[in-house]
Structure formats: structure tokens, C-alpha cells
Image 1 (cartoon, chains in turn orange, red, purple, brown):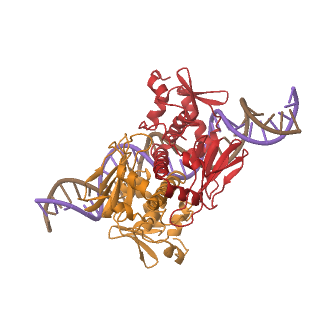
Image 2 (cartoon, rainbow over the protein chains, first blue to last red; image 1 turned 180 degrees about the vertical axis):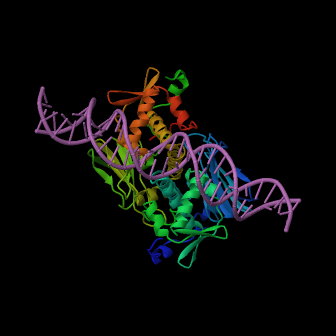
Image 3 (cartoon, protein in one colour; image 1 turned 90 degrees about the vertical axis):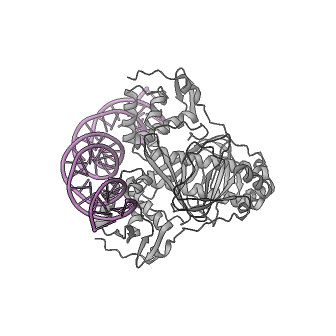
Length: 241
Length: 241
DNA sequence: TTTAAAAAGTGATTTATGTCACAGTTTATC
DNA sequence: GATAAACTGTGACATAAATCACTTTTTAAA
């Protein structure tokens, strides 16, 4: 049993980033083609040519990578207002991951060619786009750090914190994660087996760091999770799924 | 002893990327201020404000991150022609890593403000800059994959392949890595201890996958390394340090 | 070239994580 | 709400990697 009380600043610090974007890319909204995509459909597969960006007007999208030995790595979960995609730079490149919808979604598709014309014409957009790139790169770097340097327990703790930031709702002194996630899926985020995730979560439950309600995780002691991954308190725009 | 011969296509596939850049950002050369920086000096430290880009005209730079529990993580090694740096997007952000020179270097420094003005004015540059961002993001994502999903031996194998691409020179049927790297340093790339690295390298030597000459590593069976990290054959511009 | 310092190598042990097997529980579907 | 399918929980064991302690080798400095 942990004795430290939940720190009020911890509760206030996090905010649910679902449906929130730190960037402002209005100009591209004119050049994107909106497509309604039903739940469970792929936007692209690994090895498809990478020459589009995708803007989520409505819905949720999961990015996954399948390794050649059959493991699935979940790279990101994106929601309303997020943009994602890979472009080609020095040569025609293929996607390094797949993307599919988790809900019926409205997806804006932007062709690389159109994007380039727009960047060429609109300085404001170019600057905003740079900001978006900067942010995406920081998110990826922060995951690299968290997944590599404090073992699977650190990686899992970091993932739970990111879930708080992306799907958390205040719940008394705790944070309720408004998303059902299977243990195997948590493992796919961090490169661990479902059994390991299960044991790590069980330990956290024994220590009353987390609990479960209605099949969702509830985080009671986010400070304990932060200790496990040697959290550096990066902004919520970066510490997200 | 491995029986498979070194595949000629493996030898031809890699190329030394030191001093090579896949992007073309001539316009920024006009706005950067060149500074001679002596070996061992820091360009910036973690927590310094992130508002500049750095272009290496001459020399080598190492990017490292120190975790709060005292570990050092080496993020990248950059050389002539490379550009690096972090900018701020939605708010003033701090650097998440430090950068210091490994040799006496000539470094061009580009202020974020100047960069933004230039992007605003020059469409061509905006597009090139997007390509650069795209490439950097792919490099980081590929490291995330390699360091997280096939254990420390996979992570080490991937790092050795990247070293071949960044510092390798053909040497008969082998690749000579023209850079002395300590075992502890290899550990800092992948989040492993020097002892673990030592044992993994010893195993590779026993299997005649690698050897050592003049304090440098020589890679004999790059295909064996590729098998260890389930290599997906990404282009050398991405598979680098 | 001697000497001190740094790095490499290695055995013994502990801890972390994966693998396998199977029982219990929840969820989805008819 | 019965039933199958999917998911969770857990023990036993195997393997990977860290830690500690120490010797040997290499490198840098005097």
C-alpha cells in the first residue's frame, strides 16, 4: 500500500488531448478530399506508396506495424483533429506502417503533390507545417526514450501516463481511462507479451497504483507511474499516444 | 562457424553516408552564421531553449540524453552535411537532449525566427525542409522499432548495421567500421550495460559474424546481423546513426 | 618507456521477461 | 440466456539481461 496522497498538481497537470491539436493547419482543409471511412477499414498498408497525409475530422485511427516475425507494434492512436501520414523525400518511399479506422470516421486526404504546391504558395502554412513536423518528431523521440530505457515496467508506466493524457477523465483523485484496452494490446505498444503486461498490471493493482472499473483502467497514483519511467514531465502535447 | 558466404549484394547495398545528405537546403546557407567549434564543446544542453537549427559544414557532433537516473542515451552521431536541432512549436520548448562536438567543427547556426521568415518567403525551401523533416522522422521511427522489438541482441545488430552505413568501408568481403567505439558507448545507444554488449559481441566473434582490427569493428556477415534484427532493408538514408 | 588510468573480459549470481500450458472469466452472438 | 470465442490470470520453467566483483588488456600520460 502506498502512503503518498495523490498530488493535486498531478491531477491538474494532465488533460485529455483527444480531439485536441496543438497545430493550426486551416489552409490544407481546402485541398483535402473528405472520405467517410467505415470502422475497421485500412487507409493504407505497409509497403503502399507514401505520398499522402491524412487528417481526422471525425473518428479514430490506429497505426500499426507488423514485424516480419509476426509481432504487431502499435505506433499511435490518433483522433479528431490529428493529422498523420508519411511522405517521401529523396526517393519514392513506401509506408513503414499500416493505418486503419477504429470507428466510422471522416478522413481528409491530402496528396503530397497538392501539399507541396500549397507549401510553395503559402508561407504561413509552411511555418505551421514545420511546427506540426516538430511536434511529431518530439512525440516519436519521447516514445523512443520511454520504451528503451527503463525496462518493460517503465515502458508500461509511460504508456499508462500517455493513456491518461489522451483518454483520461478526472474521477475524484484518480484518472479514469475512457478506453478499453486489452492486455495484449498494451503489450503491442511496448514490445512485451500479454502475460508480462498482465503481471505488471497485477503488481500495480496490489500496490493500489491502479485499479479497474467497467473494463477500463483507473489510475490512482500517477506519481508512482512517473517514478517508474523516470518521467521528465514533458508537455501533454508530446506525452500522448 | 557460419557457412553462408557474404552476399555480394549485401556488400554493395550499404554505402558510407558520412558526409552525405539526402536533402538540399542551399537557401538556408545564406542565413546561417558559421561558428568554429572546438572538439568537446557543447552546442546546447538539455533544457536550453530549443530555437535553432545546426548545420555541420565540417566535423562531427554527438547528440546525447542523460536520464534522471544517470544513464546516458546516445541519440545520434551526425557528420558533414547533416542538419539537426529541435524547434519549438505550440509553445517555447526546451531541448530534450544535448549536443557536443567530437572533432573541431564548423557549425552553421540558424535561428528559428530566421528560418520561419525564409520558409515564408521561399516555397522551394519549404518543400525541401518538409523532405528533411520527413527523413528525420523516419530515422527516429526506424530506431524505435529496432531498439524495442528484438531484444538487446536485435538492438545491437541494428546499431552495427547503422554503423556500417554511416562509417563503413569495404574491406574484401567485409565492412570495416572506420570509427572506434567503446563497448559502453554501444550500450548507451541501445540501453544496455557494457557487460551485456561485451558478451553479445563475444558471441558474434565466436560465430565469425564480426571481428576486430586496430580497435575497430569489422563486419563479416552483415546478413547474420540483419537476421538478428529482422531487418526490413530500409534505405541507407534511413538506416544510419 | 614506464606508469597510471581506462577499458575489456569474464564468472557467479540475481532479476526481468518470455514461453508454455491450462483454468477461470468476460464478451459477443445467435 | 446459452454457447462459443476471446481474453485474463497464473504457475512452472527457460532465457535474457543486469549487477557485482575481480583480472587482464589497452590506452594515454608523465
